[in-house]
Structures are given as C-alpha cells and as structure tokens.
Image 1 (cartoon, one colour):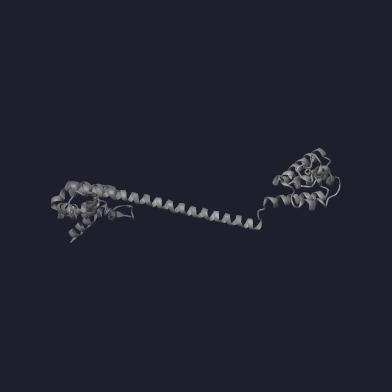
Image 2 (tube, helix red, strand yellow):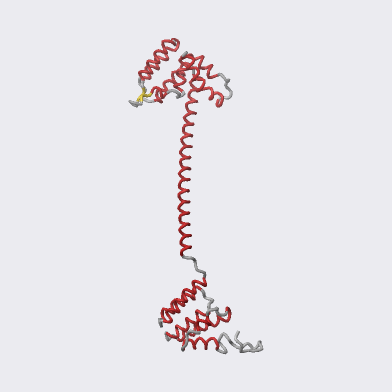
Length: 296
C-alpha cells in the first residue's frame, strides 16, 4: 500500500513535467523510471525534486529532523536490499545535513547512483519549480507596485478634485471681472480720490485703469485733469493729446459725458479745449462734409 502511495505521488509530480518539458519521452516514462528504481527510487525522487522537503523540517528548532529521516532510510534499506549500500551511505550523509538544500542534494546523488535518468528528471523539476516561484514572486511585486500606483493615482485625483472644488467655490464667491468691469472699478477709485482733492492718488488709480483698458479715452481725459490739478501741465498736455488720438480712433465711452458734467473748473476747461481744438482736437473740421464743424 505504501508503495502505491509513493508511485501516485511520483505520477503527480513528474508526469506534467514529462508531458510539458520532455515531448520526446513516452507518456508513462516517469512512472516506468520510478518503477524500475523500486520503492527507494520513488522515495528519493520526491526529495530530490523538492516535493517533501518541508516534512523533515522541525520548525521548533529551525533545523531538519535528521534522526527521523535516518530511521526512515534504514527501514527502506531493510526492504530494498539491492540499494542497501546506497541507502547506507545516504543515511550517514543525512546526519551531516543542516539545510533543506543539503538534504535534497544528498537524496539526488543517491538517486543518481540508482537511476541517473530519474535523478536528472527530478533535478529539472526542482529548478523549474524554483523558477516558477521566482516568477510568481516577481509578479506579486509588480502587482503590488501597480496597486500602489493606482492608490497614488486615486489620491492625486482626489486632491485635484478638491482643488477644483475650492477654485469653483472661490469663483462663485468672487466672480471674475471682465476687462470693462475691472477698469471701471479702478476708475471709480480714482474719481473718489479726485473728489477728495487727493489728486496724486487719483492719478495712480487712473493709471491703473488705463493699464487695464488702454483704449478708453475718457479715463485718459480724467488723468490729464488730475495732472492739471497737480500743476503738471506738460504731462497733462501729453495725456490729453493721447486721449484725443484714442477718441478719434475708438470714440468715447458711453459714461463719459454724464460723468464729466459733474466737474467744473480749470481742469474741465483744459479737457474741453483739448477736445475742441480746431487743429489738434478730436473735433477738427472735416472739409469733406456738408457741415465741416459738426461734431463727429
């Protein structure tokens, strides 16, 4: 009965190797080889192929249980008289083994003395299974790396989503201004300072508005008025000339006439003269029209 168990174990361990890796071998070659080697061959091949090495390891002492294995080899030698010498040498060698690999090699060498071809098969199976274990380990490492990458990707996506939500909240709370809205807000600050006679601050706000919307002639007219109040007449004339040029090309904003009517004095008169100057103003005569002096 025990012999049948060993042969069954050999068939499970060696038959796939024979079919997959030794296409030239006959389908029942491993079993035939084991049968030819007897019970000793079946015993040795399972150790040589690394199939049952764990059974001899004592995890309490972290060392192989060589005494139990030696006893098993002695019992086997008493039944397999033709292999008694090989098994006797193996018994003595096992006593010196301290690792699973040393035990496996001792079993393989003993098997090679009985059946070299079977020992070769067992060695191939052992190394193929070791390679398979390495591949599985590498696949496990790669799968772990892929999982970690997926986790980091999800974390980054969550961070981006949170940032996008915060940006949306800020935009909802503080809507973005258009260019006109931004320029109008800056210009309003300048008008506020101008009414308080803080003409230096008014100039700064008008300049900011001009930077945002450089095609607005009305803002430049008020900037020139602020320079007049500061006594910087030459600078006021430069700004007014620039405003006239812009008005000629782009016209005046719709708010200008209503706002400038609220201001009186030399600064307002300065702007009016600049705009209506017959040569340099924005309303110069046009001889091509029926009414050359009509306002354009």
